Length: 331
Ligand SMILES: Nc1ncnc2c1ncn2[C@@H]1O[C@H](COP(=O)(O)OP(=O)(O)O)[C@@H](O)[C@H]1O
Ligand SMILES: [Mg+2]
Image (cartoon, rainbow, N blue to C red; front, side, top):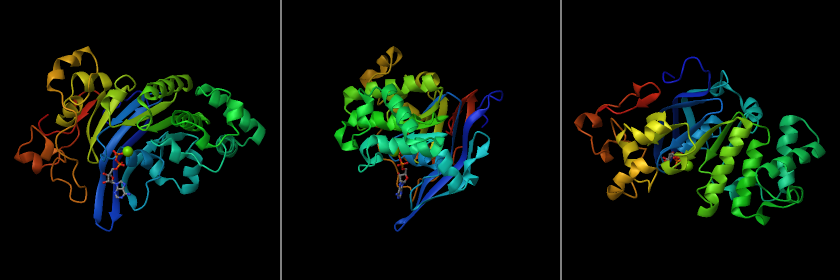
């Protein structure tokens, strides 16, 4: 990608990603030319309202787009390979080993009929070719690292015996077992109690540094990524609006959608307190139906700056400053 520093090799570089869902009601143009990427050890915040395509984009990196969805085009370059060209047999060796995912709902992502030790141990035995005893040791060690007390006895427990926060810790342990290069965390705290959310985010942040992993932190809440992301990509209705460093997204946002999202955050830092009086709780309007997406810029029906041209011409991603790209005709 043009906005990547040429000297440092990108770990992941997604470009031109296009995914449609072929439903009975019509073709849902869910992801339309999405691009983002990150370097080793970096954290990218992938942000947008519900329905903007964050989960589907993340699943695409693992080639796990659910039916009736289909990846129609694009490249997913990861460590010099294009995952688009990989077979299912090859992807099985990448999932959980080189790229791992933490899902929004820990209850659904653990298998209810196996113990924690059984299901996490399987992953280690398969990827690392080790025996059950060694796997149990490694799982116990990882459970300890994610802050689970008495980890050896937890191996024998079933998911339903754990609280929501504990389940998410187990899911984090599972994702990190093989020390992946990249972790995808899809709204990892959205379904947890507010008091536990901060703990889980702090844990992710600590472990990411400890294992020197890259992370894509997916969230609908810009406030969540404010302190964690190096860079932020803002998505809307299956397209990229803006990518920049977190600092620039908060202090010099360019896309009207980014600005609208920022105005919905209760409080980010001191520099944002002066807009409190005008604060909204949600961006006015609704995300469009992607069977018949708006022409031109997909955000134009909700945009405070839109004019006639915005409904006719699809904006390209433009570099406004090194490392800062925006898709808006007005920029
Ligand atoms: N199973 C499905 N069938 C049809 N459309 C889908 C399906 N899953 C996702 N989509 C489409 O993809 C869009 C993006 O979904 P998703 O990635 O889950 O959004 P986000 O994670 O940002 O909330 C949805 O708005 C919807 O239009
Ligand atoms: Mg989602």
